[in-house]
Amino acid sequence: MPIQKTISPIDGSVYVERSQADAAAIESALFHAVTAQKMWRNTSLAEREAICTKAVEYFLLHADEIGTELTWQMGRPIRYTANEIRRGFQERAKYMISVAGKALADVEVEALSGFKRFIRRDPLGVVFVVAPWNYPYLTSVNSVIPAIMAGNAVILKHAQQTPLCAERYAAAFEYAGLPAGVFQYLHLSHEQVAEVIGDSRIDYVAFTGSVEGGHAIQEAINKRFIVGGLELGGKDPAYVRADADLADAVENLVDGAFFNSGQSCCGIERIYVHEDIYDKFVKGFIALTKTYVLGDPFNPETTLGPMVRTSAATFTQKQIDQAVAQGAKAMIDPDLFPANKPGTPYLAPQVLIDVNHSMGVMTEESFGPVVGIMSVKNDEEAIRLMNDSQYGLTASVWTKDLDAAMQIGEKIETGTFFMNRCDYLDPALAWTGVKNSGRGCTLSVIAYESLTRPKSFHMKVPVR
Image (cartoon, rainbow, N blue to C red; front, side, top):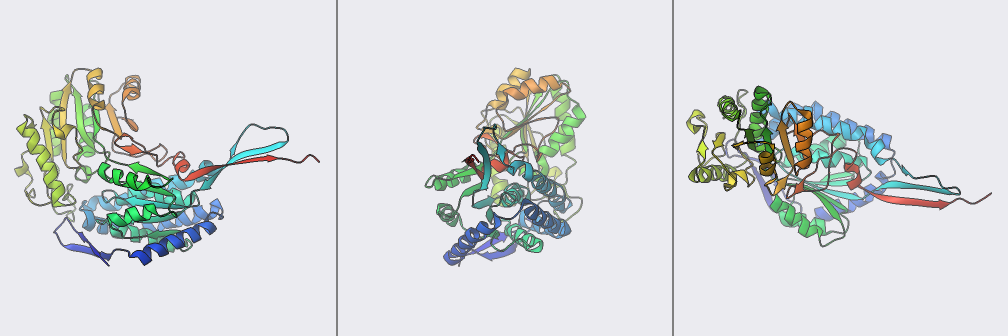
């Protein structure tokens, strides 16, 4: 069986080695998923809630260990990794558990004499979750917990960079007493992923990843009469109006651009600032960026770890170099960050001004620690530039005027629109994208619609 290796971006060492599943293992997983789901769908919602809640308990008990594993696997500083479990993961899991009763309740229709009519939400069957490495628990929990709460079985394929995340889910559900087969994981190649999707026992695919990966998933799905949820890339914009709280906007947008070394689908990648405050904003943004610390992610002082691999850092640096060659001005001297080393995953943050939309750094997803800042004359120019993108995942406006924000938000082509915050998923709201940012929805009560199918009951009651 082929061996997949997880190369730690910290020092280039092999951190994890796992055998990829062979045909027999894949067949076993599919067989047991179908068998277990037939039983699981008949369990009460209260039982599902108890088991999923206990699984969350496992994660919280082991948050520090999981944080250490995450740092080794993908490079995020240790000061942050355990919080992926304690904050976002816990918040999303508990919220989706709490709203399952409402989301899965029978849909009543108008009373009709002599008839009993309602719509029931049946589980789909087997849900195949394909999860990425950048926020490996936050992205996967969006689908895994609600799929199981809805009465489905789940097979999880995690990124080759973060295989231990899949194994942690298995340990959590074993700890919680989930019946065998309801949750399973497989370590797979890209080719094997397509084969699994092509199997008639898979009823839904939940994919998070690149646009290129989304096209590959869609191609596999197209051979069958099933659908999939695709959460893809982003080039998320922010607009800072003249009336914004400048200090608040600077603080949050620097964090939104550089947290996780910019490796976030909903991170801030381009900023438009009203000309009246442009110079002050840029000055503050640069000053705060210079306070970041790039280096060993196990050093508690480090705020920027390595990118996931050298090729990712090389791509981002190439975008920066191309923009500068086209007239952009780089405002951060990389020498301020001694750990910055070309040919390694360690890349200093960069702020670019004098940018425009002829530059790839303002139109193509960077997924790295770089952001371009443009001056705009008014709301109309900002809206035009924000919409000038193949992506539409999130967008934010920074202002003290709620009415103005609402008017701008209605004109922005995006899945989520923020006012005075960014780079955050509220589990009560639908997480979705437009354009090349994908399709479908996770989180909120609406997410359960994708994980169930409507079944209508239309019964004529005998007259006695």
